[in-house]
Image (cartoon, rainbow, N blue to C red; front, side):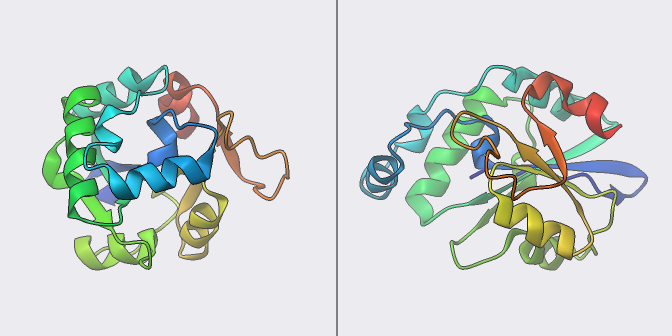
Length: 173
């Protein structure tokens, strides 16, 4: 699960990116999760959604510090996710990739590992509503990534939404 967030650190804006944001998943979620646990390179072989180059462009600029916060079950998955990032986000600074284990919360991990306090200028782009709600409860701003698997048809998410990755920069800046 890759997440996007923006925070002001050292007069730069920081941007955080998450899994469903950019990865095209098989619609049979149980099948995907089973493969993810068994196949070492499963994540690395997934395709990126259209528009992923917009995230890479944000990585290239000194205007934003882009971070990826990704839930990952184990080291094999971490390695496969790094391979995916190298392929689709070649300008991503790898030291800005934070892996959390399934029991850990993204917001808490970001605050602890980067020694920051989330605020309204910290944006998280994520497809999972619970992550967004937790992020906003900690003071950040959530943006729901709309995909065919995460369409917000239940209307549980009331905040910002984004379908086209190419429109991300205009949405938040």
